[in-house]
Length: 364
Image 1: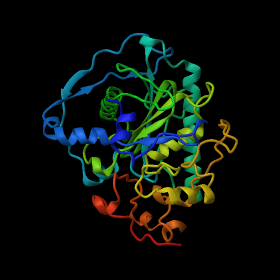
Image 2: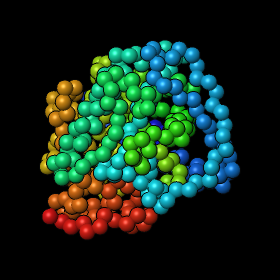
Image 3: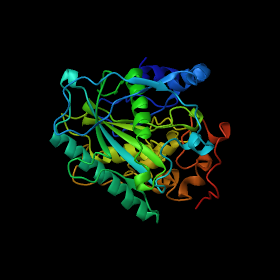
Image 4: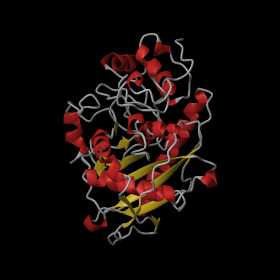
């Protein structure tokens, strides 16, 4: 089953497909509802089953041209996550040290791979996105601690890897990647985390950036507090080119938008699936914060910028990320008071009291 149409039909409140014919002014995150239901039904079985350990290679000079070796099953350990980990997932708050690991996915069997030039450009756009996020944090007096590959060409083998895909990839405007692909990425996250580079950076948290060598609409698989111990590792899938343009690369603003999803930033455009982002709030953001990066990653004329990120993290998004302990919208939109920065939920906080609401939240 694909998460695209299947999840939309089952849970339309989480997100919706674009209805416009022109390219949309947003990128999006996906929930794990369909996989959460499977986990709840098979929870007892999963604790006794095996998980796949996948093979990860250090970045070669040229993309690999052979199929990935078969995954070797290893016993799945009994989950020992703390309550905070069950709430936040692998990436918690921007103000806590977090390592971002780049993984370039190669579909060598179909000739879809990353060349050295394209890899280097993607790494540089990632650096631009991380630097922009840090600069935005400074606006709110917050220190952002994100560690990423700082080499010019993605040659830091500690933070940038390549991987030969075993499942098919689809891309396209709806990015209808299969459950097999998502499961493979989950297993890849676990393998990479087991080969941990967190200690070297004094970090306790990790997020993954998967780069797909095809055209699509980038998305993020964020952990939800409702997931508990399941789907702990969070990752963004970043396509080589934007499906809504004529072969144009995904922009640094798109990279920043997806990275911010890892840390609790909601989609603020109409159709967002976050419980507290309704039509009234989306309309308010469009009028009050038209440059918020969680509203749109494109410029006013619909183009993408590659030399700089012209967007902003609005006070509302800063509040959801934990960069600020309040925002002006709390009085007009009281549902925001239930937000726990960095934590996504399927329902409102009062329905899933696994984490305390943001303390001392007050309206300005």
